[in-house]
Each structure stands twice: as C-alpha cells, then as structure tokens.
Amino acid sequence: MPKRSRGRFSPEEKAAIVRRHLIDKVAVSDLCDEYKIQPAMFYEWQRRLMKNAEKAFEPSIGERRSGREAQLGA
Image (cartoon, rainbow, N blue to C red; front, side, top):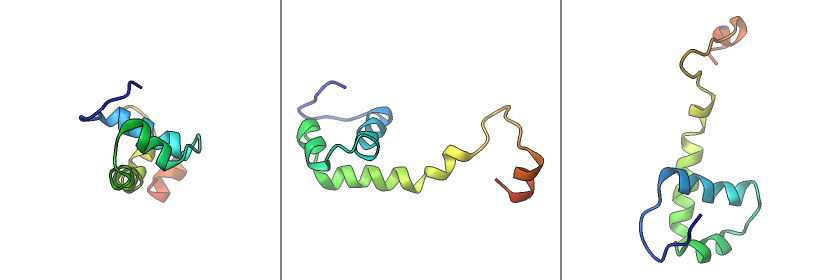
C-alpha cells in the first residue's frame, strides 16, 4: 500500500491496515507511524471492523444454507 502524508483511505485500505495488526502482529504504533494516522483512528477502524464482523458470516447471494444452519439461524 502506498504511504500517504495525509488523506483518506478506502475501506479496503483500512481493512488491510487493521489486518496487518491482527494477523501479522504489526504493532499499532508502527502502523500509525507508517500511515501517518493517530492511534485513536486506528482503534476506531478496528472497533468498526469488529462491530460488523457478523456480516462476514451471512450467506452470500446464491449461497444455500444447510438444513442445520437454517435451524440455528446461522
């Protein structure tokens, strides 16, 4: 991802930055320095990601739910 001195990040870029912390274990301070963002902004992105995590488990268009998943409401 290209470095930015200031500006907006796309949703894809925000997700990639948070993923680097969660999966690659890159320190928040290092990410904030690299992307020139405040830690509060990073933690807001992370909070929003976790708040919407259940959407990742919703069936996609055309995806069938098994009988058991339908019973459980998954």
